[in-house]
Image 1 (cartoon, helix red, strand yellow):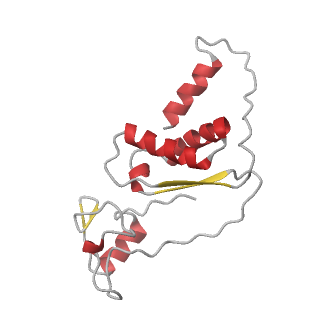
Image 2 (spheres, helix red, strand yellow):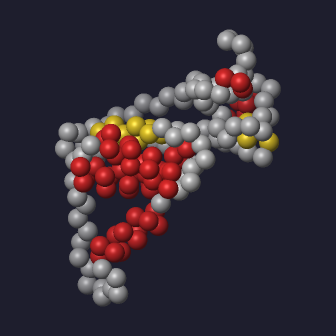
Length: 161
């Protein structure tokens, strides 16, 4: 469900340019790496005026299934240093360990800080079940490896990030 609202995204670029904004080196008016934000009041005009920086969210409605385990909501400080799949991998691992969405959110923040994020950082994890995510069973392979399956899974998780 993830979609970045970057200024150079086609739909955002068209909206920005229509409202008189410019994109310079991937930044809205040469200052912001996002096209939608709740803060950054210095970039917004008087209330009700047309402004290329929007606080209006893009809404999407979807039906959840039994396979949907949790939702990660984060600002660009998280997504600048972590792919969506990496964040899901970290969150799922944390939830399997302690099933605490607040601790999971803090761990995602810590991981982003370890990766030297340079932007504001807010993360919320919302669980859709009171139970932790189920362990994913990986079928045994007949192939001989020079690395353990645990090591291989750890390496896959790191490479996904």
